[in-house]
Image (tube, rainbow, N blue to C red; front, top):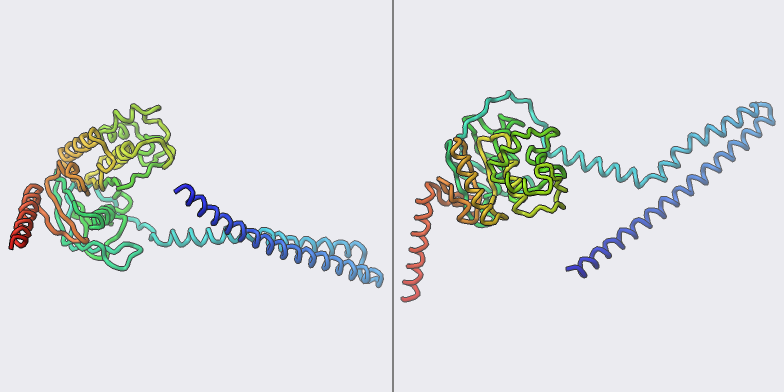
Length: 363
């Protein structure tokens, strides 16, 4: 792709340079016109002042003062035209920022609720993406109790990631309710992030130390809580092997960490602060065998502490510690129940379909 990408970049660069040259020519033209107008007006003022001085109407000092005042008055106009591209960029930036911030409503002041129990209730959920017009998720509902893990499986675009974003409050549902220990998740306000940990499909690390990334960019991370979260995620030994351990600076997306290392640090960040509910979206997508073992161990220990977990997965190893299983297709629930029963029913259904196809072939 290098040659084609270079040609495409060069074409875009040429278009940008051409537009910049036209803009500079237009700005220069207006600048020259304003400068000419300023010189003409100053000359006219001097001529008028000289005439009035000769007539004895004003003094020579008043003539000079009028010329200086006119020059001062026209200078801002000339500077504005010269800096017009900068003014336009500032205006576009302001409008873009206002539009972006306008999409997110201001957070309401909420009564602080106590730490909830890991009891999740989802009812009649319908979700339409912010930029979409049609619902991508229609879910009857499900319950999740303390110490349980729910595995959500399905093909791509089946609604798994949409479900994760709704449960974490990133996307609001257009219908239905999501309750954590009896309270809808919007009642927790900004405190929801303290009770719900989230590991997205694509983990983004910020330009900060590993400890600061785990502590969610806190200026003074709690070292005890950071190490505890890393140990729960099975990432403590991996972090110690880095050049500076927890003080290793991660250069954002351009860092030298592998995908598996980023994912394990992201899991530690999700478990920071002892949340009661953990939502993992494809947590083993970039993990090797030792990383998958560490992940399953972390899930098991998290359940034993009386917390709840929801895991969106493609690989069978991702649902090894799940008690419940939900199969999704086209944004709807196709099966739900104890993991082994759902898997057994799925295998039986597959065998029945295979037998019917074989019978049709023979006939």
